[in-house]
Image (cartoon, rainbow, N blue to C red; front, side, top):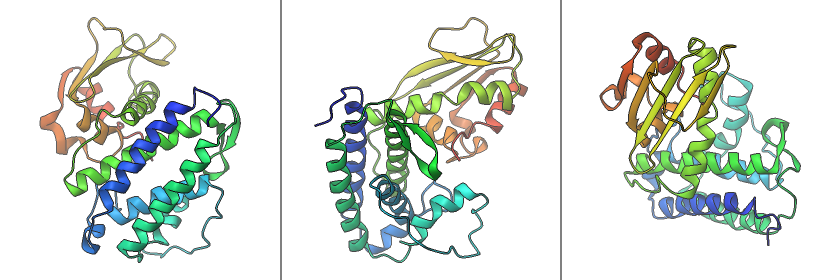
Length: 274
């Protein structure tokens, strides 16, 4: 049993989401594994392969020794290469091979997490050898699994879990990136504020404020006279911030009020995930 109560909610949210993925893909026939998803260049099989690969790495399994094909256009960085290797190694796996490996990986990883006795501040080795706390690593895995659950749901036409416990953790994970993006990348002026008014299954309002030194912060307090206000639904916000869709493709779902120039700059940089 997990010793630290601070960790257990992450494990519960991760469990709910990865088991939902298992239920989604278990009945798929061979051809359905090739359906494209909004995750750029990845099919249903590729998304599930990515989830399996990352969880196997968390289990301490050795990374596969594999040379990627030279014609993969989306491999433009070492990080992209790093996450593509476990995906490409499974591109020819059959549906039964995929479902059995996913199920077995969930069993192994769930057992590992049930026996987790380290504290939330324990330093851990994350992706590409990056050092982070155990709490942050679990938060990141919960975020990643839930976002890919949603990729699969959209690809398969089975919406759901948009307000699940993992969805809340994913929201908070994404919101942390807005202040830097708006202050630095989009160039919002000191003293300005940008409001995101999100409705739907997960409703929230957040204000990004730029201080006089040009640093951004985020809070839930109402802002009077913001420079820009974005109003949209939670799923559209998610798709934009995760780079699943271009702003022009969902312009009819995003209401913008205020400084159009700043709004355009924010939308040009809104995709926060690699």
